[in-house]
Image (cartoon, rainbow, N blue to C red; front, side, top):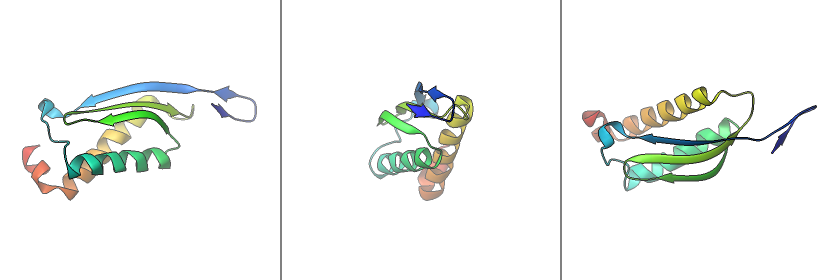
Length: 97
């Protein structure tokens, strides 16, 4: 629950996204790094992760976010930043995508 000067809010959302063509690329070091990146981004954006799983071909999250953020922007930032960083750090991913 978040409280401001005159408001109390509790915005929660369930987010699931899959890898392109459901390729099972999120395993081993890539899976661990993906999880770290998601946690870093959420901390920086004032987003609280209630539950989350990074599987081989999808990411599943239940988050609480501030009312000043739009859910579409949150998803766009998470997917874009994580994808870009993973492709920079693991060149094998860039060949596949």
